[in-house]
Length: 85
Figure 1: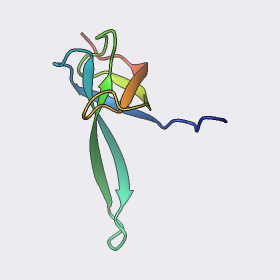
Figure 2: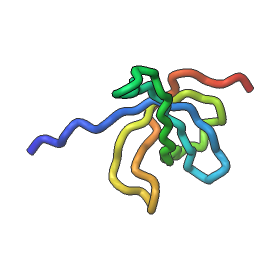
Figure 3: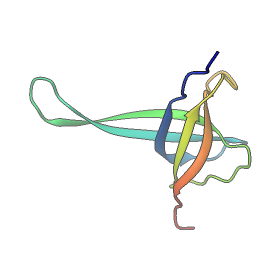
Figure 4: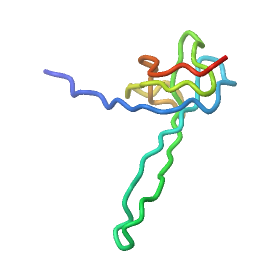
């Protein structure tokens, strides 16, 4: 039986205070159905970062995984852009 392809998202790290966990903000633009204006939608995800290598401001790619804790369902894959240190 073939496993389904996992969702992959890209977002900016907004918190790295936890051990092996970062909080990532996903932003997307959605057109308002009636007024046509673009509205910025935001979602925060907790992402597992085994090596504690992500820092605030980094843009990362992460993928869906099994539940790792109460809130964590995503796993770090790679850096898209590193923030200035």
